Length: 310
Image (cartoon, rainbow, N blue to C red; front, side, top):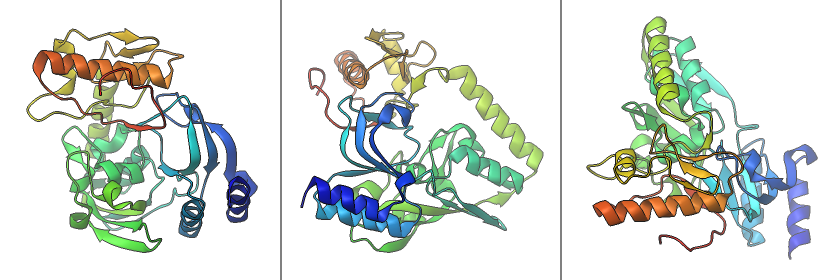
């Protein structure tokens, strides 16, 4: 058992067009950084997801479930495993009454547009969130006072044991940028959203207003992963960073955004290590000045040099 068995097994599961080898992750993350994934596969259905997870476990190979890559920092060394990319094929939606069922790879902006088209309110806040349904469920994505926990009724997940399970919103344990999904090793396949009838013009007006706020306040012209740090209890991460004198602070080609201090951005040509080191220095300086521990909202994958803040 080894490299040949893994490669052979993958090509038995997937069509050739759904497998890439040594695929640069900078092409699949909004930070626009990251080295190659050893294998990059795009399942077409739950059976293929089950099969590739089973193969990875048999071959003791790490795997990662990838959505839009909007909350992920991949090491420059890449990922020596199997990257399982859902958005290519898990992109179906269906609407019946006030309910929308969406597969994990559906983008949150597309989901909000689907709701608007059917005169359904409740997802206006998601119009500009650059993630997808699966990742949004995992972290209970939210903006402008709205969160997915307010509209999710249930999720269909794949368990560690390879069985498909239906979970209620309560069973998902959705909290601030968290859920039980990572701890229990679930993979989100689809979600059911329950919304409410609302005037389409009012929905559109709110979506446009939120997107205008986003354009005015966030550095959308640069590579980033959105809000880089979680909001610490009683504080705002961006204000703490600004008060620490770090607006515009750079390390290599990574920077604290001049426009919004809660965002770390790629000025163009940054490395993942530079972004990681900048985040480490921001955390250290904020802690030194205010005794507040900033926690990364962005997930990291792969190896980073641990020269900075622990």
